[in-house]
Amino acid sequence: MNNKYRKTVIAGNWKMNMLASGIKPYMEELKSFLPKTKSCETVICAPAVNIPTLMKLGKEAKIICGAEDVSEHDKGAFTGDISAAQLADIGVKYCIVGHSERREYYKESDFKVNAKIKQLLDKGISPIICVGESLEQREMNLTSAHINYQVRAALNGIDVNSLRKCVIAYEPIWAIGTGKTATAEQAEEVCRDIRAIIRDIYGARPARSVSILYGGSMNAKNAAELLAQPDIDGGLIGGASLKPADFATIIAATGAENE
Ligand code: PGA
Image (cartoon, rainbow, N blue to C red; front, top):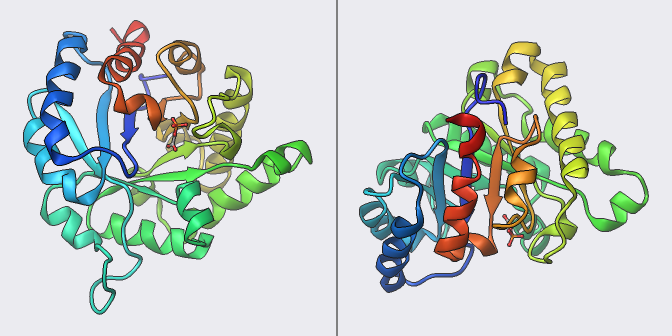
């Protein structure tokens, strides 16, 4: 982390978990474990139907609400989709885009990811842009080429002012939900590369101020070491964000350097 230049963000990704009735007990428990002062922005990206409840019940704990996906279209006949305007309308501030589960199960292309990012930015929502390599790509030494392609494709046509609203999340696919975390060195290496790509496109200052998160089996035990890396500015947390005590420990792990 380097919060002299950029904000630290801890974002939970609830995925397709949690019922509206579970949010109250979750928040009660989270509040009981949270540090007195938080030195990061704490976001929970929730299933769309849970967002209004989360917004109400998460206020006291200063939880910022995020969505997990958005339509690449503006509006119209797209049954089941939710537009950026609809998310902004209910007060959503962040939205995950290009998560590997969406890329894999719903065949989301880099082109679609880019279109979604543009929809969000147009409505003032910060995209959390996920990139990451598969195990095969890592083993074939293709990590750097793949990340380079994904980052450039995601940011295609996005100007420097809009970049300031973007958060990038490096999530190696082989580490998501597997319990296999990238080592702090592996994660830092790719996050540093991502910053270098952004520097190449936008210059040194914008690159210095973009928050880059690590995601993939981040948990209460490994968070502090990952967050201590200079180019890792937070985490995108799946499984551990469903456990209030663990999520609070990760939030607290951002404190040491910031306070
Ligand atoms: P995980 O998920 O923390 O359960 O590995 C991270 C993610 O998919 O964003």
